[in-house]
Amino acid sequence: MDGHVKKGFQEVEHEVPLQSLQDIFDFDELVEFDKRIQKTEEEIGKNTRYVVETKIDGLSASLKYENGILVQGATRGNGLIGEDVTQNLKTIKTIPHKLKEPLNITVRGEVFISKTNFEKMNEDRALNELSLFANARNAAAGSLRQLDSKITASRPLDIYVFNVQKIEGREFDSHYDELLFLEDLGFNVNPVKILCNTIEEAIQAIQKIGEDREKLTFGIDGAVVKVDNLSLRNVLGSTAKAPRWAIAYKYPPEKKETILKNIVCQVGRTGVITPMAIVEPVSVAGSTISKTTLHNEDFIKEKDLKLGDTVVIQKAGDVIPEIVEVKKDKRTGNEKEFEMPKNCPVCGAEVLREEGEAALRCTGIECPAKLLRNIIHFVSKEGMDIDGLGENLVEQFIQKGLISNIADIYLLTFDDIAALKKSGTKFATNLINAIEDSKQRPFYKLLTALGIRHIGTKTAKTITKHFSTIEQLMKAQIGEIANLEDVGQIMAMSIYEFFRQPQTIDLIKKLQNVGVNMVEKEKNNADKRFENLTFVLTGALENYTREEAGKIIEDLGGKVSSSVSKKTSYVLAGEEAGSKLTKAQSLGVTIISEAQFQEMILTSKLE
Image (cartoon, rainbow, N blue to C red; front, side):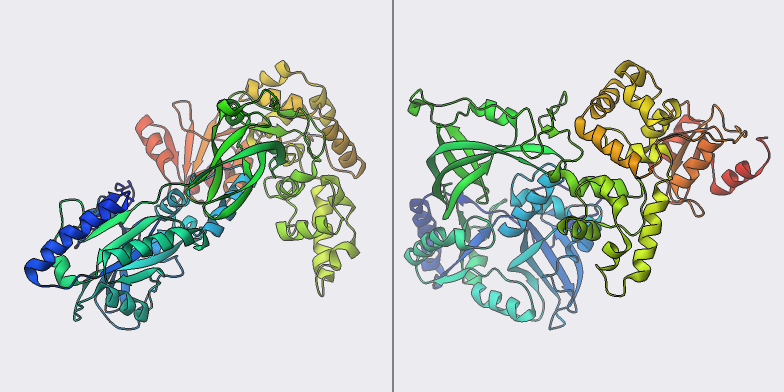
């Protein structure tokens, strides 16, 4: 996969270029390739054999070892210059950090994500309302080229090594022998490597791979035919872009017709409603397809899909089945239009499509499909900050039927909690106390915890300063809310619609009944030394979290902003301050250290 050097990575000049391959699409071209090889073979008296390998669908990379220790890993880039992604490659479990022999060697491999792992990644992303990866290749490439290696480590990357680029102290005559040697060294070598004596055998190997490709655990986009004899390779040489001793056969994508029987809608953890096509089962690229995602309402309209249509299905990247075409010439007139539901198919709440978005969403806060995600957010530090109530525990409570809505958190008993852990007495006591303490959190924390679309902590604080009780806010009109500072029309509409949903009204009553605070209690702090001042926080502070520092500023009458402008009064800069500090310097905004901030809040008044 070709690429460019991403800003943020060091450039690596490849000692041996990582060339791409010439693509062919029929066996006649492969026979012509063999004729060129045979002509050279006759001139120099070498025996031609071929190695056929799968062309793995991923991102090419080189691994450099000195004395058997991995010292550098790089992407292919443009073939001559790549990106230093050593730390990212070290997170891949199948890449050895130390070889079985202390060799100086550079190898080339393909970083990829297996079919199963790719499907799971996209399922998780769909549930968490993240954009889906188009194919496994893009997912692998994007994962390997992350500036933060922790993100790379969280992705299920793998690698198959397929070539020795350079080696010291060893000589080989055969590419196939090289591959076996790489296996002995501890590398994860391409498992499909077939030694062929003639081009006819190579064609048979390609056909067999094509027949079995669906059984492979990894995606491929073709088969590679390589000259096995390394001295013959040296004579054949390369063009500016590709070696003359290897070629890539590309399989045509398999497409099949079937009937669109129905469209059903699924509700993800975030409430996004996704239409799924139910089709007459059909075998595509070796697997039986009976359903596939239709993404959203716009996709259905764009394809002009109707129930009963004859549709064409193929597998995107040989992994994800998709409808690519409607055979309108086969319509009988009995096809039926499909309309997206106006109510959630799980809980019956109204569904909403916001302006500028493609997705429909369930608005019900008590929807079972959204329950786990809603509760995780509700108990989080940004929300009601219930220490000890993590995702694993919440899942157990839901599975046991102890929690069916957010308010049930406050009905958990000591015995409910203690039963989940051995010697859980102390844990249960601490969690019961944490749940009880959360009832007295400030009103803005509750508003944040409810997970209203577009409403974060900052907006919740602004709103609860104006509407000091839940009753006032529930009665407020869109205009009243939109007129507040930093609250726009979209936020106001989101709040207005949220508090008019029957499930919301029901939940608020339940929370009131268990004693959760819904009043913004007046602060008696007369010290308003930061009144009319705007602070921006950047970098890591030693003695405060940003939330703690922000609360101090707000308690003293100041305002905390997320962006620097000419109106900013102070930028509080901690360790490793980034672009905000740079912008503050360019605008001439006053920059203060943590020590200066402490002096400001400890003095009786500003000098």
